[in-house]
Length: 357
Image 1 (cartoon, one colour):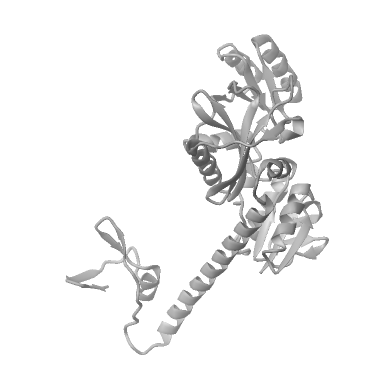
Image 2 (cartoon, one colour):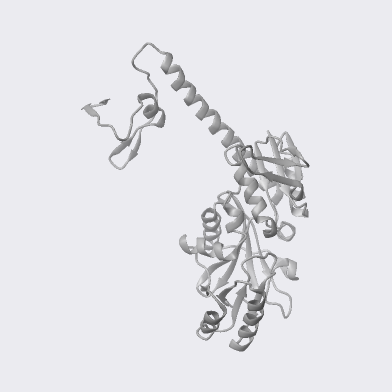
């Protein structure tokens, strides 16, 4: 199996690429900045001016500044590459905090109270009604950048005036007191493989490692683990960093990251995180390839049945029940060429059902 990791060349990405080399027959490490997407009738993806090689697995990583390029690459590869851990839409939704919160809202994921206003004047009216302190966020940004704190209406209003000059949209969010700490949980598939508590440095509210925070080991509650996994599923991704606040009302999700850094987590974790990711990529790639072979085999059976002189084609299968209803296997529906808008006569006796058009 051949795989590729596309990234900006961060240390974390290189750590994953090295681990992938132990799980795949061949792994290419591709620089995101050297990829070009050509749209049109004969659209294609070029790497260093040459058509991109065929891969069984491609893991795309990159910052919010490259969200549109990442989404374009994923959209072009969708259906052509057996396995990619991040869905196409995630590159624009997860890299935008507002869109992320909307998905969390729709999926019933607990999060701090969050407000969005259409303009500066409406926002100032909103600021008169909220409880301070508050958090003000720019929709795009990582590593704690674009996150501001206001402890009064006057300070929030001043920040708002500055944002108005920059013509920047923003999000207002309630501040949850956690003693300057948060939780980073790394979700890989259907489990949290590593987590840490991040503690902000003195006089700093942001606990991100990139802003000087320090990490320490933490034991997550079952509730927090489930919330982290549910967040990744809601966003349509198999690999995701989920940031959680442990507030008085329970765990609250404040952010997600689909290109999470591993260095801080690796320092406090007892497992080899890149290896866990690489093993998961291999397993899912094998599953995807197997599913493709099964689908192809089914199509071959249908083709062969057309050549048979016998009016019947038998298949051996278990029946799937939905309550008291029986669902026909997809292959049986295709072989019989059953159509939704046609009428059928169903003859029934114990152990036998016959359907005629």
